[in-house]
Length: 195
Length: 176
Image 1: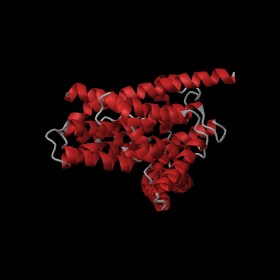
Image 2 (image 1 turned 90 degrees about the vertical axis):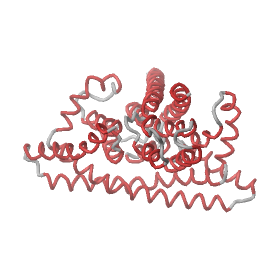
Image 3 (image 1 turned 60 degrees about the vertical axis):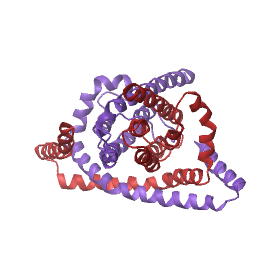
Image 4 (image 1 turned 90 degrees about the horizontal axis):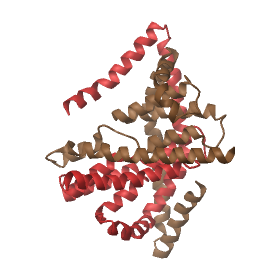
């Protein structure tokens, strides 16, 4: 991450210097910083709402029920998470929210899943194998209805705004399969190397 | 579509109802539990700020200074060789870096070329196939204070490249 971060910053500064408009560095930096706070503050509402609801679900024992339901197909994907651990429940909730296109709920559910996995990771600053698998699924997320882009198409007077749904699902399935395969190979490789 | 619409309208209210009823049956102090959970949401959002600032400042500089355009120019011979329309390249490069930026580029492509043109359809498909890899990694890892991402950035970007190529392939297949 350090290398990539340096690359973004120094690459940008170098190119701005060679183009002679160094002011753009300052503009870009400030714009980015302001946007970061905007995004974080914008998350507070949805995050509080969903984590509040989730706490009720947790105290009612629903998360454990979901974790038990998730177990059969989660076992293979997340072998390092113990059976019936609440992390599995949160992971399933996050993935379902993603599939259903409930973006505002997916993020808070994902945060809970990360917290549960970080407990299993003994709070180290290094990502665990389970986290890498979880994020491989999340960055290549499968959505049944890409609602935002459909509304853009409707606004642009498309004759058939939803015709893109099937190719989208197919392409995203390919992307996710490749991500999960790569994740599995890398996980196995690093486990072997660590003994 | 109407089934999807009805389904998505009912999901959240039903989820609320199921959780609240289960809570009431188990004699959970629902109000107290809700407030305790909601407080956590606030804490997480605030904890994310330093990570988001670090990432969005870097991406902001990279974009604003034209460094991103240089990357595009470097890739364009390869995409030309594969017969991928050059107009779509900005979207492909923007997609993993900035969600709002990518949506802007996709919207512009759809409006200039028409939603039912090949480019308009391709832009629509590409926008829906992956999530903003850098953003997802920043907030998910940031929320738990993980700073060493190990191989997850690689898998995320690999998924982006694959989804991009798959989008081109399936658009050709469906829309010629």
